[in-house]
Image (cartoon, rainbow, N blue to C red; front, side, top):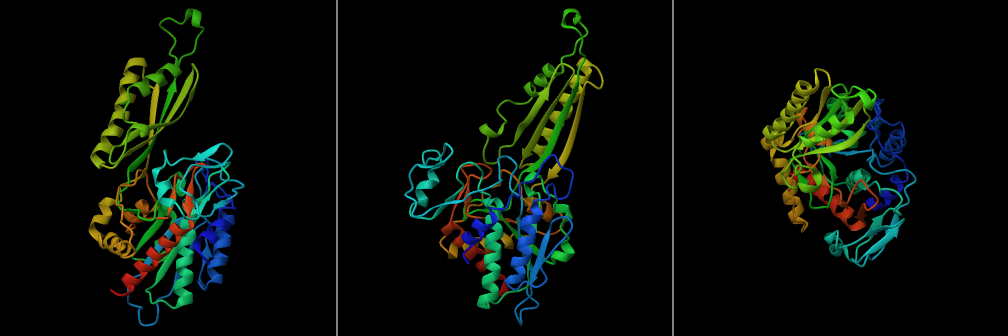
Length: 405
């Protein structure tokens, strides 16, 4: 089975995670895909495939005879899709022999090569999109499909390999529960997440990341007699945002440039809340951003009175480069495989994160590979069948290189 055929099956299953849930997993619907995958893994010969209570799927392919002492490696992808846009009732559409031009996929959604120049490079390929009413879900169901296609071929074709560990995880899109992956059960010395974009993606740098929330407590009185008494919480909230650097937002930054991103604001005279995500590749610059938020809290409480502004910061993940610099053979091996397949690796830093960041800091070095997809998290998401085939060949090539060591 080709990986795109698996993808078409997986995207029909609604697996969006929920950032407002404290459950693990955040949505029970992620179990629907997890259970299907366990059965599929057993069907292709992964006999120990299992699902735990936190919606983690595990399975191992034992080493080929005579290769028991080789490196134990793993591959990881995530079950959930982003809650940014609907992932329910996905209807995948196949555009065979795509012409590389402007494509109306439905519901007013247009893929325009003037906006996405890479579309011209996809001319002649089998393009897969949603019908425009939902996201597609290739992030990261394409990664799952590629890992299982790789596993199926290893087993059916009798290719030599060391032990291969596989895991599929919940809730990556909302900061993840990477700390719940049982590393002993997983049983690998290192792993690759398959959770990136185009086939040439090879990432070993992520943001340092945190969530920050300001709560503002106002003083609400009749506006006719408010002088010297009223503290309008909504105006204080606007003041908070105005104290942040206006150019350091996602729409004005790229590459290694960090940002403050206001993701939600609500309020009235008596109370207000602002929620941000804070990102930077540099540990030092990241700490400066957090210090800036704390300084804002201090200044406004001095201005309006203690307890007016309360800041809460939750650390999410750190830049995995700190851990991967000591095992760059993982990046070098993947790079060599890509080049052997005619793929020019793109080692640009991820302007985001992966489960691999958490795993790397827990002692499981874990760079990230592409899935072949583009424009994730919204209705313009798309991928090609050929790109997925290429990623599968990259995975097989990495396995082969480590079997030869």
